[in-house]
Length: 305
Image 1 (spheres, helix red, strand yellow):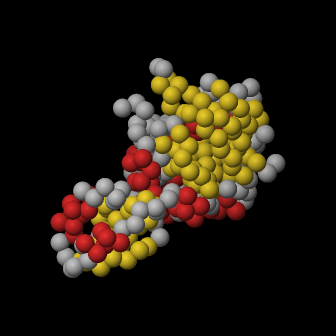
Image 2 (cartoon, helix red, strand yellow):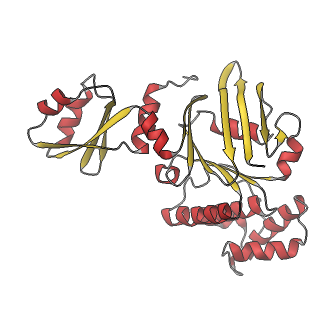
Image 3 (cartoon, rainbow, N blue to C red):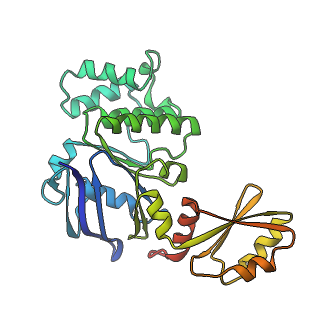
């Protein structure tokens, strides 16, 4: 089975408000697929529909070859799902949490599997007896990943898994994702971190229920239809305020001691660059994912606002 997730035009509404609008998504075996979008864009709802936790209003789709509407029980057995918030048992130890979920998933040779997971995640003999609720954010995240993979799933669904942890813990987490990917496990991960998005081999951007762009990182940047200039010089705050009043400019963002100035690709900015050339150096660059992210957010309005 090459295609792991294949959904077409799935929809979901709450209280008369459409939160997922005709979303189509295809994820192939071994992909590390990044799912991007602002808060409230429908990412979590989409993930829950894909794995059968939430019924769809309309549309069709399969996950791991099973129909997401009628075979959700089969999907859940082969999926590892890591939620945004820490949802494990805080009053159980690390080892007890692993044992409990190994039993829940009917893992064969549970004792050996739990021992292997403790070693694999480098939890250590001392920490395995620690109450899960007393762990730091990074270790809670590591434990949650261990629980999500204790039954050797074919698909990992990770909903903003690294929110609130330090850069070292995030890097360690992604090293583990790449290790799992090398073993053939497919991953769909939602994130707000652009450096994490760049680690994915494919991306999809969803804004307020609508799919806007999908493809490789390069495809997403090229499809956004924007141009970006890097501007350096003195008193950039004054320049930023002046550029924000130019209708041709779509966004101005500070990056350290420089500015990223973006506009639609069709706009000719020659006269603006000439107008603000004195004291400033302009250099056209490839737009970053963050430039694209901000541009798409500005182009789409919150349907719950």
